[in-house]
Structures are given as structure tokens and as C-alpha cells.
Image 1 (cartoon, rainbow, N blue to C red):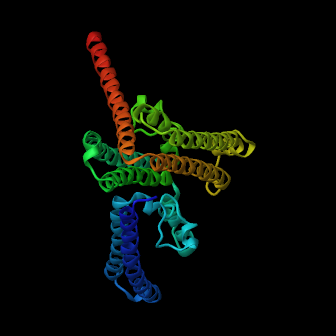
Image 2 (tube, rainbow, N blue to C red; image 1 turned 60 degrees about the vertical axis):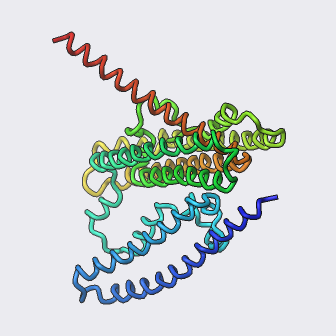
Image 3 (cartoon, rainbow, N blue to C red; image 1 turned 180 degrees about the vertical axis):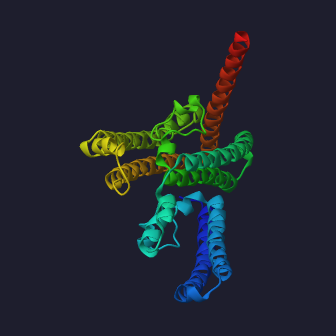
Amino acid sequence: MPDRSTTGTQTNNADSFKTFLEGWMVRQEHYLDELLSAQQHCHDMQDEDIKELSSRVLAHYQEYYEAKSRIAQRDIFLAFSPTWLTSFERTFLWIAGFKPGVVFRIVTNSVLDMSEDQTQRMNRSTTGTQTNNADSFKTFLEGWMVRQEHYLDELLSAQQHCHDMQDEDIKELSSRVLAHYQEYYEAKSRIAQRDIFLAFSPTWLTSFERTFLWIAGFKPGVVFRIVTNSVLDMSEDQTQRMNRLLEETKLEERALNDELAKVHESMAGPTMLEAARRSVRLVDGEASEEETAMATLRVALESVVANADSLRMRTAMKVVEILRPAQKVSFLAGAAQLQLKIRSWGLQRQEDKKETLHRHEAADL
């Protein structure tokens, strides 16, 4: 049976966010009234007034995400199964929220007078944009890895003293660690939405780290190897449940491999090849077929990566649900250690290659 204090805490968290959301939605209606009024009279308004209204609306959304982040820190599982939403609202969820690409559909349906330059800026992934995206994610990843090291220190400390800790404290730590991974996938999702090709060739990873990639991330089945190496006291029932989950995960991995293979085959199909041939001799106004083919490819790749990321996160969360509190700490510590070691080895190999190159250059002088 679930611990009553744990159930009560989860209920309190859900009730607290539900109360916040009800007030937030009332304010959302007021902002909508302001926006509709501004839409009718925007030609009579100063740009500064429109900017001020836009800033207040964006701050309103920021307030929502800050409150949601606090809930995720307390209970990541509740963030993935939000009881404050209706069943209809939950059908639109993607990694505990809306899919970032939805905003582009809203732009398409609500903004009908974009200039050609605005449309190009909305759609294109130029070299400069790609560089900015890569630099932006690299900066994020560096900070994320520092926090990952801090979480590892907490997990290793908890591992040593877990017999003196309350289950609720261990659950709170596990939730914070899982929320940390969720933060990573949300940031990665934004990069994939801006430039899906960059997600498949991540310049922020070392060449050694990239050898472990499977559909723009780690293979979900890796978590079972981490369990095997870090959790040594599973019961027979836990082992059976873990084996069933492993088989389910393998099936989903194969389905995604097939999905990606179909995308690769489509790249060699007649439409894409003809678009590639025509692209070298296109003049103004003739790029529609090439752009359509590339847009179709981007959407297909984005779908595969989104499904792979979803499988990665779902698998990790299901594994955590099978484990007892102390085992969760061992598993999460093992996962963090593996990632940080691979990162460290990759950076070291990179430095070794640079030093070798410098020595060869010095010898040639």
C-alpha cells in the first residue's frame, strides 16, 4: 500500500497548483480582453503601449512556468500526470506541457500579414542561426553539467546515509533529479524545433560522446544496464517487472528504428532527389518544391526525435517507479556517474588530440 503521508503530500501539491491555476486562468481571461481590445485599436496605440502589454502577458506566462517548476521539483511524477487538467487537456500534453512547435501553428493561423523577410526568419535555419543555436545550447549544457555534478554529490551522500533518511526525503531528491533531466529535454526540444539537423549532429558534444548517440540521444535500453550495475538487491518481483519493461522498450526502440529508416529512404526518393537536382538551377519563385520537400523531412525527423525523447524519459521514470527508495538513489547516482564519466573522457581525448597536433606542428617548424 502507498504511504499515506506520501499520498497526502501529492494531494496537497496538486490542490495547491490547482488553486494557483484557477487564479492564473482568471487573469488569463483579463489579458485576453486587453489583447482583443488592443487588436481592434492597435492603429491608434503607441508602439510603447503595445510593447508594455506584450511584456505583461509574457510575464504572466513566466509566472505559470515558475509555479509549474516548483511543482516538478517537489513531485516530477505529478508534473507528468497533472490532475488539475481535464482529460481533454491532457491529450495535448508532450513532456509535461505543450509541444513548442505549436507556437508556429498559432502564428500561421493568427498572423496573416507577415512580410517575406519575417516569413523567412520564421522558417529558415541559416548557418548563423545554427551557430547561435549551438552556442546557446552549449552554454546551457555547461551550466546543466555543473548542476548534474551537484546532484551527483547529493545522491552519493544520500546513498551513504539512506538508512537514516525518510522515504519522503529520498522521494523529494529523486523528483528534483528527474526534474533536472526534464529541464534538459525541454531545452533540447527547443533546439530541435529550431534546427532538427543540428540535433542529429550536436556540436556541443565531443566526438567520443557522439559515438553513443541513438536518434539524437542515448538509447533507452541503457538504463537497464545501469540498473544491473548499480542496483544489486532487487526482489524477484522487481526483476520480473524490469524484464517486462525491457522487452516493451526493445519493441519501441525497434519501431523507432523502422520509423527513422523510412525517413532515410524518403530522402533518396524521387521527390527529394528531383528537388536536390532542381535546387542548383532555381531562380526566384521556383523554390517551392524544394522547400516543401525539406519541410516534410524536417517534420518527419522532428517527430522521430520527439518520440525517442519521450521513450527515453518514460523508460527512466518507469524504472524509478519499480525501484524502492534506496534503490532509486543508487540508480540515479549510477546514471549521473556514467554521463559525467563519458563527458570527462570525451573532453580529455579532445585535449589529448589538440596537444598531439600542437606537438606535430611544433616539430614541423
